[in-house]
Image 1 (cartoon, rainbow, N blue to C red):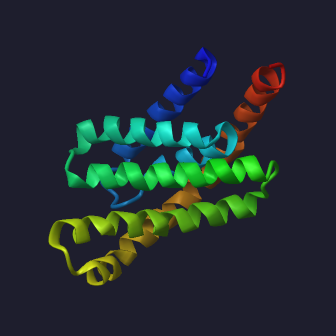
Image 2: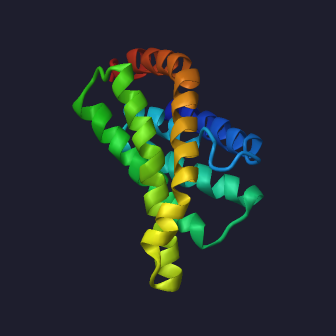
Length: 169
């Protein structure tokens, strides 16, 4: 991993952390998932996982850390890895598919986070998950909105980066 890519990940992490803190008052609406998906799509699964780890660690230093932190890292890392694999397999993914991926990721994140309750109590997973579905819907809709806002600009910059730095190696 070169210095330029590390710098790019640091900028994306900053965008996600600041966005997560800025939207903390709106339950489950933050740009983290969308930024991780975009990073995974263009930079690969390892970058998606690294970004998930970095953003979760940094933002939870301010927003609070607990047992959920591990599950947030697992959730976002899994989403970043899936996006990275999708980006490697399909080079030109239609924007509509990316929107659907971001919508689905909101529910996937919520499902994995709900496993926290099972880990702590040993029962009640489905009840906890069903009660949390409205919040998962907020997350999914927020992902779509942030993807519509961020993807055009960030994808342009990534395509420029890939053309300049990856095609010459």
